[in-house]
Length: 152
Ligand SMILES: [Zn+2]
Image (spheres, protein in one colour):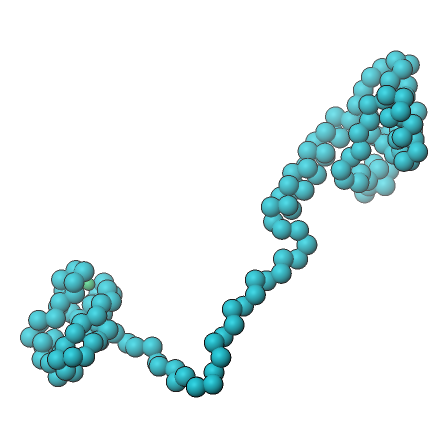
């Protein structure tokens, strides 16, 4: 017995056919006795075979390629960062930039010395610590903000 990879036309179904010999296949094919098990057509021919690659006895199996090392952040983390940056940008649109006056302005709002409004600006670590100790509600921004007077 001999097995052929067969292919039908035009659907291109691939299937295997067992024959007594190559001649037996040719004879059956000519008489329309070889049909595709998928669509029943007798327009069947031998499928082109991939060339057989000779194997060397001492050839090692090809090692699996290591996954490419992601550069920077994984996409999920990058997406989260992008979202946070967008949220911050949106929040800051409602907020006034007070620059170096941040500590003073925050304190003034906290003690009711001026009208409350959302502000953001610069504070040194020391200033931030003092504000927190006084109970002034401040929050570090996750992303650096370009002061308006420095932005183009
Ligand atoms: Zn078919």
